Figure 1 (cartoon, rainbow, N blue to C red):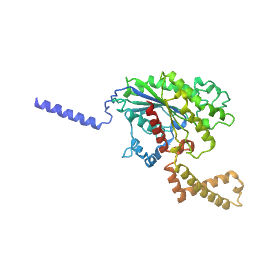
Figure 2: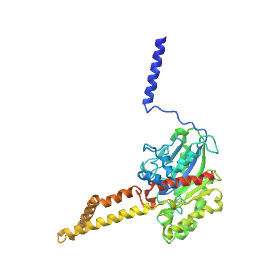
Figure 3: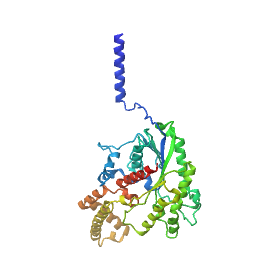
Figure 4: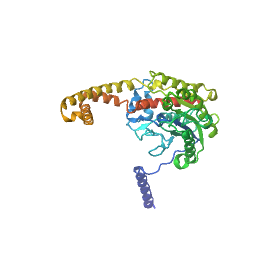
Length: 400
């Protein structure tokens, strides 16, 4: 009997040791106690997310909010993965349906958007908050498409048809397509919750808020319709919110939106005029007490202007010298009369010179720490995208 018992204990210990080493052993799912708190994140490319993970460490240099870096990056250099916050995003290169971390932006695993820090803050908020001792999981449904407008693509039914020609983008038959797609994707996500997110199986859902980050395409319209687009931006947004409230039966749905803050405070009059059109939403009587407006221009910081300018000046210096050298070398030769050939030779010489020029390489190295994308995408600054997400969450919290 003792021998049999000893054998059983030994086998049990061996099995436990094997399970500990086998990372494929399924761990028990997190048991949540409350309904899933759902937030719809909508807009265009800046909501899709063009923040480069390669610039994330710059967040730690923020003068007042550098501590936020520890919320998304572990001390060993790995990135935090939340087990209580989930993201659904129908992405062109493959749907995203997984726990929140970096890599949920527009271009794959090296990119992210406002959802990262917004989700971190909302996860903390519902993890045993003043409002509840229960742990509520959070679900972010991203419905965003680059290049889509409020006056056209996101125009909701109660706004009616535009009283002006929208041209080829969008075509008349495509007006409202993004609004319709947004509603469709939210419904599909909630209907397939048990399958797509087994961790949330059996839980009820509650749509708690709507988050909006958009504006570039409305700001860039032609002068022939610019005034109408700006004048109706607020009313179109209000109509969209009202339609969503009816669609999902949430009559007091809280909403927050982020200003188009590209370029910071020193921008042209057109940008200022558009920002003023956005700011009107904060005082819309239909949304009184249920709206938060976040200024994002202040998140733009000097290096986003200074470093690209310095690198550009160094590149211009090097390429100008390379072009002069090639023109001198080819003077009088038959190739000098071939414009395409000369252009190719000058480019190749310039590229080679840039690789060998120490001043340019140093300027590029410094720039790459902060800038990895276009200006309209906040230069790809992870710091900016994190501050946007954090601020949108802070604006949402009092409305919940």
